[in-house]
Image (cartoon, rainbow, N blue to C red; front, side, top):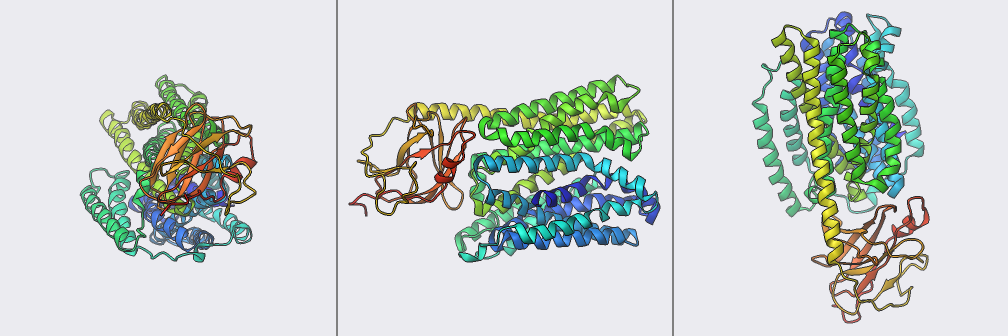
Length: 598
């Protein structure tokens, strides 16, 4: 039901585009009002993502999910009943805010309820929902308009959410796990931080979304305001961190390499990904005379390819890692270049001619969105999942706005300068979209190469530590953890041990990371050829230990590193199809302090 909710909110980004002419005929909406119907949703959607993610983390995801879904369903019905254009714009803004409140809870639940390979599969299904909702929107909108009629058919674009929302509400109330946020310390809400960040997002996105209709009249000076507000927000968050320790955004997340790079790659990819549908839909309807339904059908191959490979990518990401994302970006780039080449030939049946290239691009897209999201959130603690998802999706929304603004400027500029040459305009627009995809590819390749070099260097540097074995089940250990033996080290602080597979063989080149409760990376290393490792954080404390290796499911566990500890933790990595090892590795564990520690 989480996927249904996420699908609904993202579908409303694209489904409305094909209904704009019908809105103009039905309620006399002006061009400016139509612009706000489309852009206002994206604006308020992005405005509340981070704050809503934090509310879900701190006050309970189920509560936020139910409230947000109910609001989204009600505002969808209200938008369908709108008697005039002004009220439609208001309800559309509220609908966008409800969607922005809902989406971080969906990703937060995935982060909370799934581990290892299962989390990859869940994100794969969510990625399929993203791909399908973006690409199938024009097709579904065209069908609803054809069924509902020219005057009032646009209302069904909103009504369709109501029965789906009611079913999702009933399932959510019954099936989602109870909130546990109130069981621990109740963290204060950073209201000032939320206002500052929201203001920065609005100031950045308003000129971008308004430039889609009138580039010269957009208030570009607001970008300077956004920069100032963002600087004030950063200063305030640092103060909040020192004062009460619970800022709106934990900047330690951005120091986690996988999250920072994954978020950046997502921003660049969505800039190109969203712009594709914007310019191709305009070209097909206005340049080739396609109906909304025909334009939607022409884009269906992309949706089908993306849906299939998103689910498959969720299964492969734990084994292939960043390589899968890079391969997907290459496929998207090649597919879009092929679309450009085909359109330059000006075929009679444009829809059929671009079906193959769009299918290839869709296949690649499925290997990008969900796997990148999985890798970006892999090292994020579950209690920060909603906030991390909010920041990640805010970047995607900003990227979409930047892409449509930039590619749209190239597209419409070419139309104006050539007196209406649609073929040349779509070619230049596709080149602009490909440019963003190529930038994402460069970032992905750089991350892949640097990551491999880093792991290779650390694997050469780590020497097997001398280990004196202690009884397998010392006092305080869980006797059920048969695969994780605790030893004593003869000297030194930190954490040492071995990573093995389920047969007991050492896993060389495995990557281990210690993450503190605030999400900061405390230490990282790689095992040597025998599977031995040594991790020495800067201070003692409780850490999350993440272990991963190619061909194995990742294992996550909690460990205590004493101030003068003599502790070693052995971890078993299950195979790609294993089930038991990952579950045991995820249980809390404590190292053995030395008898003279303190």
